[in-house]
Image 1 (cartoon, rainbow, N blue to C red):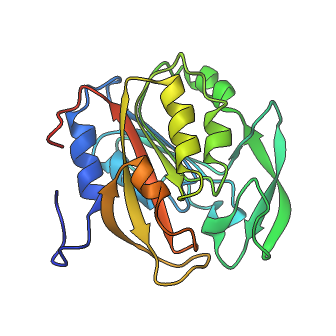
Image 2 (image 1 turned 60 degrees about the vertical axis):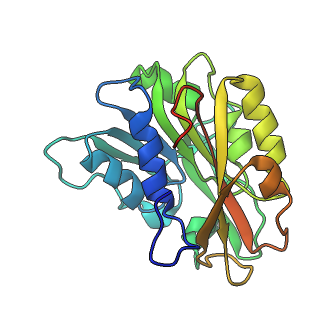
Length: 236
């Protein structure tokens, strides 16, 4: 496990890249889809490593986060929401103080409704002729599971990462495991100094869904649950 100088801090990015590198490629180049990409910095890092990337974020604050000039042309940003049904637009709840807390669901006192363009996962897959996904990452602010339920599960995903909190991690685990019983999983658990929107956290441990479910539910702990191919070496 790769860690920083503080032995209690885990580099989620380093561990994630190690796991992804050990998975058999489903596409050439490998394909990443990220829903809830914010300004797209994380997704762009994958494009720079040679991946084909489609990043989505409907928040108006990210309207100009489109593709930076790149010889590869492998990074594509979509200022578009992923809808739960066949709509061309949806109501999206924007937090202008903290754009990363924008969502299809109103859950914050600073949320303001706006109408934004939308597509569905199935429509997008058909338009882009996507038949397999190497890495699907979703951080849709309490809507991760609802959006993933609309995925066409005949399209394999080698690795799937979703945001979770202690009170919903077991629901996410059961739903995704029922769809893909061959997945292994782990949870990168993050802790914030105080509860609140836009507060940065630190990745402190890697645990199971059961262990994350037993963590405090006071709003200072959240996680990223990663599902991935069972054939990946156990040493990772």
